[in-house]
Image (cartoon, rainbow over all chains, first blue to last red; front, side, top):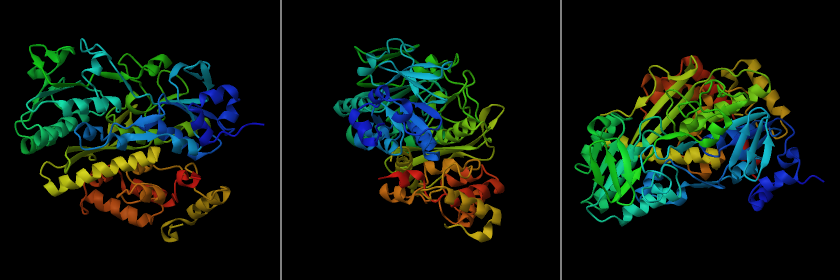
Length: 425
Length: 120
């Protein structure tokens, strides 16, 4: 008798991989249709796996993800600033299991585009007809000299949510009044290019309300940033004298760190701080490199209509790891790409070519609990890359009244609830 | 179905009707009607199922199953700036009248997402 795999026994087993080894694949992941493996269970991967399964229950969809618990990055800056409980960032994959997505909670270790197989920790191999890679980012350790995984335990990045978020939170809470906070910001492309400035804003709110003699310096490897005018105007209004932004051309680029002394060094200067948050330079996660879908930039070139890798057949890449032109790397982008990719995967499996689509990105940032701003864009594929649809998109107006800022702050929370409900709820 | 016959060609109604009949669950499959450009992105904020909307207390308007004329006129008003908004104006300007019409029709035809049908 072929055992029916339900949500319950997948979860009870802890990992579906044990079941995979014991059962022939079609029984393990019910269906009988094409086999789609999705690697990575963030906003991109979880959305895509769910959509492909919902489109036709016969599709065999396997989600490979290291952690059974997901901590969402959007809104995690509020946790760092003491405004939000980490539990509001925590999600699991029960809803995906319930619709019949097979869950494999192990890291993917190998991808072979020739034999079309994904191998996970424990040497268990899953064949696929189509592979969707949504692995997110890895850090380029030691690009900033001295900043490695061990250093991150002392100088948190908090750029993958969870324990790192809490570590930065604890350090801020323990800081003496009068302490200096440093945020080191890398050059683009990075996951969520707006988030460093939201983080700075909310930490400044924490400083203003709880450690008023403290200061914050942003050391930036860029000369400009997303929604800069809006952020800086709000900082002048809400946090005068608290935030100092040091641009690339003003010696803002951090070149080395010393975790033992909590010191960061730029080309011409040195800063010793109470709390140092290093957001490291990034690239597509390692498994993308192993699969051969990352190019020399460290990111994954794709066809913007099908999301197929330009380097390997039968593999689609979505989310932060993909090179997506004008589309910023955000949870909303990842979710929108994933839904379009799901349609493309299904079309390809039918031997069809999907029609070009348009994608949307929106991103809300909190500058204070009652002060929100946003950026939005509409994108279309042109000559192999996503470009802005002219006349669309843009930021909140510079002259909006506080009532609009307050409204956008409520939308920040609402959009978080909404997107996490669609992906994990 | 909250689909008004007046705004649809007859063939379109037949097409949706057949698709629904063909599915044992009676729920529109995502594959039953290829979404037009941009349409699937909406659910990043606007929940598809009523259940999600209620369960997670999401304040954004649920679009699935709504009268397509309402969606269309709202989008046109955002696009022209006639209706004040925060981001909808910036998004609506990215779509032509034809695209807005197609999105409205598609959203209206989405009874609910299969995820809510699958909860047991």
